[in-house]
Length: 303
Image (cartoon, rainbow, N blue to C red):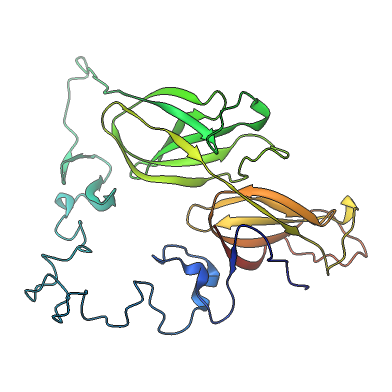
């Protein structure tokens, strides 16, 4: 297959055999291509000395020989057992308990759900106000054909719900106090409007919404352009079409990047690390279009 053009702005860093460009600095991306890195590659700060954290004394910790009490990389969940009835998870750098069914979190413990009088079961539901502006590249608009939505996700309970959309910019929403991640989802076909094509892009992690607050969200996409063709031959026949998708393997965000009709394309995306997939989109007859439905082509860093 003829190599794809990579002379586009923004910079696309391609993963190739013998390189680990798509592994990311923290190794969180689980791309199948990430395993292609050189043996011995370190994902940290580039220092080949693994025994000293940087103070020059040979101690991996704070200088007293104890690697646990002075190390900024210590695990917040190291001594948390959640009373044996749940799992400790790290949210926004803090330990919290994800409790088993029948148990409720209480600080860093899991306690049994209380017995209650079914004739006297009252609830007081806490609520805080979140307000601000949600815009694409900081530009408000009122066109629902170019709309996108912002969601909040509780990473412990997987509660996912609507916070705002980008039409009209300003928003006010009430939520139950907590720590949330912020996600972006396009809500329409955008044409040439510079709205990122992502369907499930994480914008922020560990946002503290335990009290009423203002939260402005600016979604910044970048333009990716080039050519997508079969064997390097452009065509305009939709009966012989195929499509190219980008996939964020961490959030499972999968979205359309290009098709092979007309060859050239321009799409706006949120910067990140993506795997590139090919999918046929029709029956091709004798035209030399691969019959694959989910073929991994490469991975790229878009920034």
